[in-house]
Image 1 (cartoon, chains in turn cyan, brown):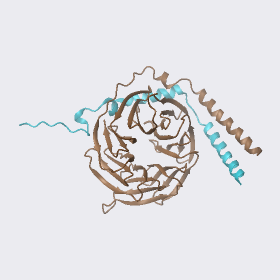
Image 2 (cartoon, one colour):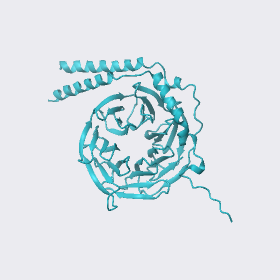
Image 3 (cartoon, helix red, strand yellow):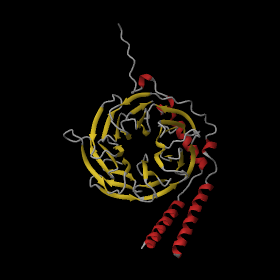
Image 4 (cartoon, one colour):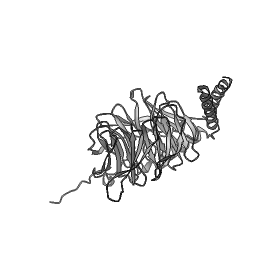
Length: 68
Length: 340
């Protein structure tokens, strides 16, 4: 019984590998260029990258000045 | 016996085929492509808020889609929903089992989920009629611990488990819609693609797998790590995957080139990666480690550009809000911190 389980498991693994082997690929140069482009195009919207001006930072208390 | 040998040979042939195919598309490297890009300047984030209230180790946190609320899970047996701006606790939900390992916030904001050594995923309704938060559904079928869960909607959730499988559940009926089997070790973490069509899983078999949710199949498998993958996430445009491992490195795999593009490692970093999150543009990779720190990497240049040091124990979870305004870290020191 154990050997049957192994054979059907192996058959499944082989089918899975056939599927993964058949995936359509693109060149690394193209993939890398697109990743880079995405980073650069969205840089300005990335608060952790470019920083947040104090006034518009929801996590910072605005400094208040009291007029005495 | 004969068939086993033939199948084994076929398996080896296919593995070689995949390796060879990937090589033919490796006409360059991300390093070469990004050669003209300047490294990001030193990133210095400050703790803006500290969320105090848990009485034991925090194991997981997840931002709500509004970028203000978040949920955290601690082995003090509580799920807490926080308003990160006021630091108020919106909900403090007592759990049946305190051995919680993961939590998730539904995109709608209506539900949260958690699970752990009880092998179940419990769904809580935050918007019940009488104002009390109650268990809405207990999803039970996994034969191992619940390591991670992520909502697709209010009616569907995906879980990963120590039983090596991931499961897509129908929340209303409490039944399994699809079982995603294939990992040869505990599935530790999962991430859903921005278009909700795919999810990725990282496991103790050192591989990451990309799954097609509706076709119910594994499309791609990525190896290279030398130990368990504890954390996984999609690059913001959905075309690449980032993994974090006990081997102390993070890796970037491109889905369309079907291969690893970069490894983020440094000889001075010897502790396993527990958690990770990309910044909104994908340029920064924040990785939490066993050594109490979060390392910040320039994802294109594979250079460390910052460190978040502020916790007194392991950083167990990290998340960047959807609008990219802040990063939240959770630690075994029982505190959550908001940084930007």
